[in-house]
Amino acid sequence: MVNYDVIVVGAGSMGMAAGYYLSLTGKKVLLLDSHNPPHDKGSHHGETRIIRHAYGEGEEYVPLALKAQELWHELEKETGSRFFLNTGVLNVGKETSSSIKNIISSSKRFSIPIEIMSADEIEDRWPGITVPSDFIGCYEPTSGVLRCEECIEAYRELAKLNGATILTNSRVTSITAKAGSVEVSTDSDSFTAHSLILTAGAWSNQLLSMLDLELPLNPVRKTFAWFDVDEEIYGENFFPAFAFDTPNGLYYGFPSIQKAGLKVGRHDGGATINPDKAMTRFGEELGDQEDLTQFLTSFMPTTENLMYGKTCTYTLTPDEDFIVDLHPKYPNIAIAAGFSGHGFKFSSVIGKILSELIINRRTNENIDHFAIERFK
Image 1 (cartoon, rainbow, N blue to C red):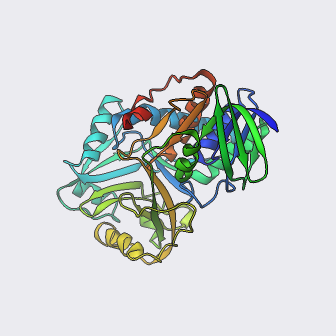
Image 2 (image 1 turned 60 degrees about the vertical axis):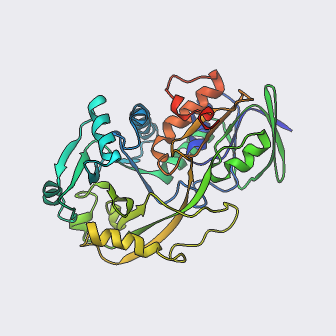
């Protein structure tokens, strides 16, 4: 039985970043994943994710968003690759929208540059957008888009170069925790370590049940799709990433990057799934295409035909805030889960936080808002 300093179970966005930051400390690290990340079985695929700093989900996220951006730039310098595209991000909704109010207030508190725009100003700046007269826009020029799968690949390669062991297609079958040690078994082997990080996405509660813990996590099916567009209107050099708070739901999207088409998804809603069962593909559920098309017809009417769509998973908490904490019984176990569809942008800083929790049992970042005890 091989012994490690730290085992990371779930080597997706948060887990792979945690593995990288632990590898920098000289710790003997093992990362286990039931698939081969980056993969299309969880929440991190689909090529791109938005990163924004003036945050509609609450001001407590802003320091972490700014730190995450700093760490993404560090990753670019370390690898010589470009992971961040500075497209800017446009948030649109009624002035009374909670997300719009949070964006404006957090931008003021943290001195984040945003431009508040009327409906007419939005339409003048971006002819591909049509909005009701009572909507406003908050445009953040310093934010943009992350190439999510390439970020994970970079952390994976760097962690390996630093000596981390990564075992893919290795499903964990049991976890046993004791004071100061853990034993983790897969279908084919067993491993021990002083500490454990669990970042298993939709599978989190299956594994946490082995550690006498259950959290209110709800995995749901989500869809997104790419549409054919006029590159002179919706191309990455002209059009921002965006989020729209509309009467029919919350929608987000990306400009056409490298002529791939305009990408659009719906943030709210979604049916609960069993992550161990095959998810129905895009278009096999009633309304997959129609939901996105009605949004585009209303707000971006010059878009054209659907090119293709995909599915992914959100793992929701009741308040849609993250869980990042030490296990209440085992302080040598760190848990990150429930990222509720807005976590990827933070994976750089969450990975660093997890490494600090394991090494020091504390972090300098403020994660009080993400404590497990709030569900008691």
